[in-house]
Every structure is written in C-alpha cells, then in structure tokens.
Image (cartoon, rainbow, N blue to C red; front, side):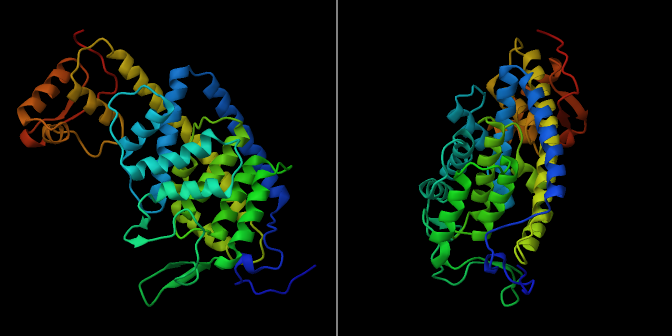
Length: 380
C-alpha cells in the first residue's frame, strides 16, 4: 500500500507507525562487518588478565556515565564517577572520593542497564532510572515530573533551538495521552525475543524511545541506556569494554542531525541504522586505545610498586594518568593537594629524583613537569 503523505509529518503521525523499515542489504552488510570487529575485540579482551579486564571495564563505564551526561550539556566530576563505580563493583582502586547524589544516580542507571542486561525492561525500571537521574525533582531550576510519564501540562513536548521568539521546532513528540499505549508497545517489543539481531535492536530501541520522548527530561540518557541493555545482550556479558556514549559525544553534531532527519518522513530509518552501526564500530576501534592506556598505566604502577611515595604524590600521579588539564606546576600541586608551595616543590623534586616525574620547562613560576615516556627509577 502506498501513502501520499507530506514528508514533513513527524514519524509518529505516519499511518504505519511504529513499523520502522530500512534497506536490508545495506544494513546487513554493515552489521556483518561490525559483528566481526566486535568478535575480534572481545577475543582480544579475553586474552587479558583479570586485573586488566577490570581496569578496562572501569574506564569504559566511567566514560559512558561522563559522556552520556555531557551530550546533554551536564559535566560531572570524572573522579567521583570512577570512585562510585569502583565502590559498587567492589574494585580496589586508590584515591576513592565521595560522589554527590547526582553522580550516584547516573551511575545507578548505567550499572543497572549493563549489570542487569538480562532483566526485563519495565515501566517500573524506567521510572527508577528517571528518579535516579533527577533526585531533587528538578531539571536545572525547573520542577519536573519524576518517575512518571510527562503530562504536557505546559504544552506539547518539542525539541527546539534558537532564541526566544525565534525558536525552530525540530521535532514534536506524541501527545501525552498516547504515552501509556506507546510505551506498552515499545516495552513488549523490547522484551520479546525475535530474529532481529540484538545490535540492530539496540539501534532501533534508542531511536524509538527518543521518538516517543516519554519524560519531561532525561530522554536521551535513558534512550542510550536502553541501547546499552541491548548491546550487553548482544555480547551476553555485563562487562562493558567500550563506551558507545563516549563515541556519540565525539560525533554529537552528526548524532543530532541524523535524529532530526529520521524524526520526519515515512519511517525509513536506513540512515539512522547505518550511522549507529558506524558509530558502534568506531567506539570499538577507539576502545583499543583504552586498552593501551590501561596497559600503560598498569605497567607504570607495577614499576613503582616498591618505591616509597606519600599520599599527595599518589593523588597527583593518579590525576596525571587521568584527564589532567594543562601542564603540572608547583602551584597547581599545592592547590590540588591543599599543601604549601614549599611542600609541593619537595614532593615534585622527590619524584624527579626517583625518575617518576621529569622537568619540562624551567623558569620560575612557569616551571612545568610531566610524566616521562618511560619511568625508570634512579633509586629503590
């Protein structure tokens, strides 16, 4: 049957909604390639020791939590995220720090999605995720309905951009009165086993959830979490060794562009499916770099395992192996470690003598330091 429809209709207004379609040959060929790379990557991971696999999981989950929030314009403290995940998974890491309740909530969502990937996705579970994301009942300065579908009390749910008075509407979601039926259909589809490959199910679940947009806020993060559930099912493992959200963040403009394009029209989502598969492939390729980083850091700590260092020095070495911004100076050391400049300089001089730090540039207040490419200790 053919429909003579305007192409500017939102997808949920199409008579065949929600029966998405795509070019089977195009998607199947790309899926085969992605699945091949996924298998090779997981095989390599399987050859790593337990501690290295654990460290890789910690890095990937930390990226997932941090970047899924960053996509929405929220910047969480990475060290708090890492500490929260480590505590929950019983991982032994140094320099644990307390995390605020918002960080804990986002971590709760990602861990529940990945660690309980084989549990059914239910309305109650989604409401729990939403409540965890918004523990105060506010999104920024504005109160929202938490742990419940939106009610459109303030008007239709729209995705807009531009200044007030000149807003551009990119998408308008289904009316709130439809949400119960829409989400029932979505959850039934998600939980029923079918011939659809789980990786394709991850792509479609993400898109379908975002097109329904059932919450006042947090739809993108929860949509990505549903994709994480399906991706974990595709690997039959709760361990995450790559971050899909981290890769989406790198390609954020393309992500929103393709979502906007498939939000209108005739339910042909070939472009979304191919973009998602490509993004997943690049996430897996990027995880190779994470493994390299983990190996490098593990070798570093092994190499100084019998070298005496104090807690301030350990804290700064952890930060230097993380996302330390800019160059290290004695002043930054003193601020971060809450010590005097003289104490900071003594700590730094000691590490230089032991071959753990190197002098980059001398020049009074502009003197900077960094980790040498390879740390060879002078004294043990």
